[in-house]
Image (tube, rainbow, N blue to C red):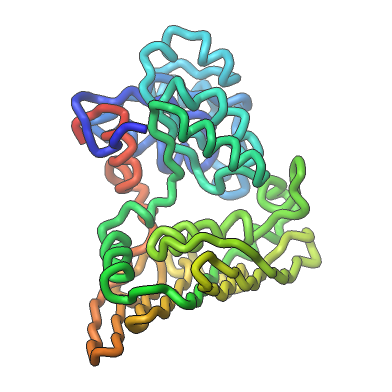
Amino acid sequence: MPDPFSATRCAHIAVVGAGWWSQGWHLPHLSRNYHAQITAIVEPCEAPRSTLNPDLKTTEELQKLYAVPVFKTFDEFLASPEAEQTDGVIIATTHSAHYEVGMKAIGRFHVLMEKPMTTDLAEADWLAQAASKSDHIFMLNNTANFRDSTEKVHNMVKSKIGQVRSVNCYMAAALLWLFEDPENVGWIKPTGSMQGNGFGLGQMSHALAWLYFVTDLEPEKVCCSMLHSEKTGADITDIAIVHCAGNAIMSIHGTASMPFKSYFESTKHIHMKIFGSGGVLSYGGEDQHPESGGLRLELFDGTDQHLPGFYFENYQAEGDGPESLQVFLSGCGCDA
């Protein structure tokens, strides 16, 4: 797999899936980014709809707005001249379609896939195996993992905390409106081999991707309990104990049950504590509100360091995209 930080030219990108996230983030970001050019959009529904955004544009409107062709299927796109001009694809389809599109894209294009990766563990393994054999990059869009603050935490864990012994992970969000609405089928109903759906799959990947990156822990055994919505059956609270290689243990608590105020005010509350042979690192706050928290490093040698500012995921709709997109475009060969 090539180095995603090397770049020589502009990247030509196709966006697969034109739902609320692509229309609100991916497509506008790419259109404003001087290092990217949109080559095509793939969307099977002529009039995409979402309870998260009732004003989505039709595919005809998207075609006119971005001046690119719109294909109904990924296979149609693959057979088109536009595919020959495309360096990378952003996969933002329904979660259950990630695997099928991803397997067709790996090896031909660089891939940036939205989280969660798949709705099936075996499919995730197969995607990872295929990506490891490809000479193209394969990325998951965990935006928090590409921020400078995350790299700083990762380095502190390695150099200061020492051997990680235990971890406490807490994430709460005001998302009952999402998981208790029967119309949000993709978020509440299982597909394929899934035994359920809800907050655990749809949201905890945000926190866990960050946690596994900064600690380098490898899970081996999981014991989990869930509380489910009486309205939809979706899990809305998840508590797990994860035993990891190296005799480390993780305690995880996630819930959708925070009171909702507004989109700006009701962001995720995240608190992480990483205990190791050298001391403890704490990092927490309210996502999108840097002033709400920060980092604290307490070591057995007497160090007690406070660093203000909580920077987790980058959801800015304005501008030319988060750090993860910039890395992806660089990996596609642009000059970002």
